[in-house]
View 1 (tube, rainbow, N blue to C red):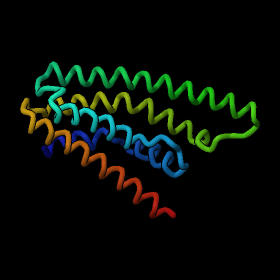
View 2 (cartoon, rainbow, N blue to C red):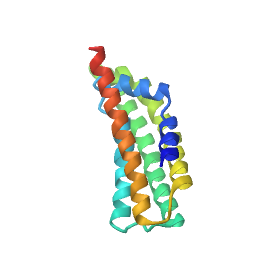
View 3 (cartoon, rainbow, N blue to C red):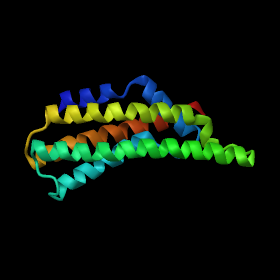
Length: 159
């Protein structure tokens, strides 16, 4: 499990963490760590409820389904930014979240690669038993919660 933890932590490079911190400081609605947490929580929920059985085929299908939804999210988020920009211009007022859209676009772009890297780490370390898969996922969720806490503490200490 230590090897898995190390692999997961390496995925979250300093630039991603800094951009995530910038989003939080700006009050942006999008929280990338929570988004990663939520997507993986849905996956472990499917495993816990026996919707996904502990085998390679079903886990790969679960990842593929998530990727399909993420691609839709990318397009939707880009369209939202475009429409918000048009709306702002028509009113002559700028939304606060647009001040950090560069950070958001970087984070969203990076998240696609990160999700793939997390998938690879899971596949590399998984044992095809339900209890072991669940343990692996809860380790991932714990790491994400720790990262969120560390970012929040960092922001608080800067105030």
